[in-house]
Length: 293
Image (tube, rainbow, N blue to C red):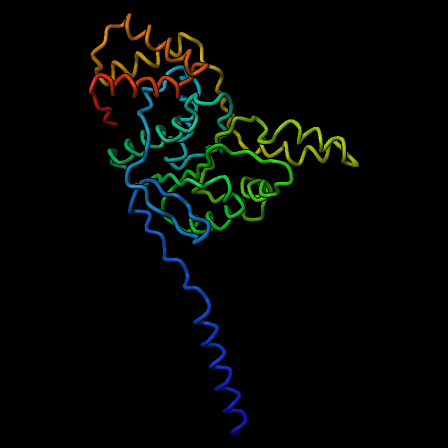
């Protein structure tokens, strides 16, 4: 009897020691603390973002078609209707990530003003390097009463990167799949999320080249909504600059605004929404004006 007692006491001590060594579970996320959060993979936690860096959708010029489609898709999702994961791809600096944040703000503001008793729409940012932990992120979102847009900016996959398999399984192919209360939005400069030399390498080294490439290229097909963003024309660029100047009531004549904006684009080597915004910040600073957003 004494031997059994000693064994039981020893097991209790081992269990207590293991419990002390194991890290405490992460705290339950409080999704009512903010409208947007950043997923931290190392601690499996969601950090609230009190103030999101974004501009109103009306200031995003030259992308009206894409903006309407993404807004409609997001509204349907917020209302509990079927909606698609979205891939925003194309030219740099043309407002892809800005559009995601602006659409979320617009839809959530409309929901908050309505009398519908629907759960809030939250924006969750996951960093590209943390995509492998996406299943753990979604596991926490699945049991929450809210609806979520999980957003990854500048998503792409390089040679020997296998984390795309986690995303592929989550978007459609896994046993559990994507939770019904979650949409996945991503921006990328690549339509197929992988560099051309990676495709060519897969074709040249595979036993069955078409099947080897298809596994990676088909990742883009998991996004039901593809929105293309193309290079900025001079008219679009000037419309952006003029829209910012009018919105922020910058005291400058139109001729001077156009001249300075074009000179600025030449020094930057191109035109884009980002260049238009950077010019506006410079102009506002020189005019002694702040840009409240």
